Image (cartoon, rainbow, N blue to C red; front, top):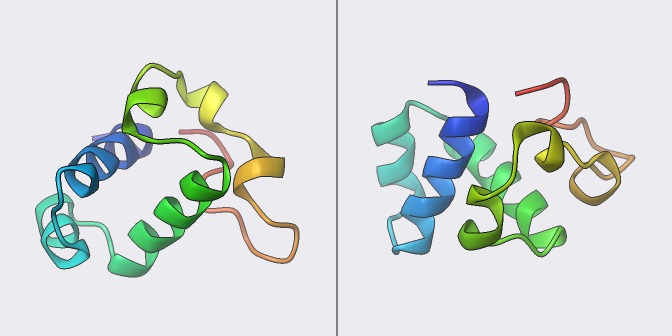
Amino acid sequence: MKKFDLMIEALRLRTRGDSLSNISVRLGVSKSTLQGWFNRLDQADLNYEKAKSMTPSQLDLPDALCPTDEPCIMSGGF
């Protein structure tokens, strides 16, 4: 599964109430990576309904998702 698809699926699972631990095991993504994704999506005010209709390039929003003092997990293409 591509990183973009993993992120959307993680967001879907989180929206339905799954724990970080469950999502991590299910998708094979570390909890710290998941938390980074969710924090950046929250900062950009993106929920599952908004994000699922976007393309990978539309979700690659460095200003909204990647604070300048942190490495950006989501940039570099999905």
